[in-house]
Length: 146
Image 1 (cartoon, rainbow, N blue to C red):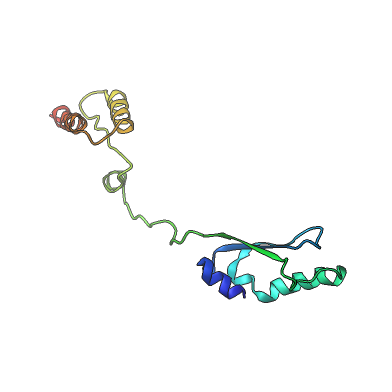
Image 2: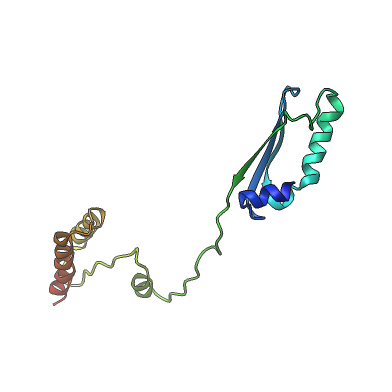
């Protein structure tokens, strides 16, 4: 039964699942806390049901009033961090798109340039005006390098 539920809900073995069983004869529901799907099998459910059935003789799981709720949390899949083998800062700045190098070899305008670049990045859009402005900022770097 549990495997059929997993198939119907597209549960993978490393996803987190929780089961809750409700019945009118129960004061409190039967809850199996979140765990990896591979750790919760049909035997796990039956053990919890047996514990309650021993202490509550009026509880009949097969009378049609039992409700089973499964809560499924799909866990992300990935391999973790990407390895990076930069030998110096210039290689790091060149390879990372999240870093912008502010060239300050001819004057002390690095703060002003970084503020302009940051504001432009925040206000970035895909209009032709914006692309023109972006090109002007890029070309101004060449002017300052001379």
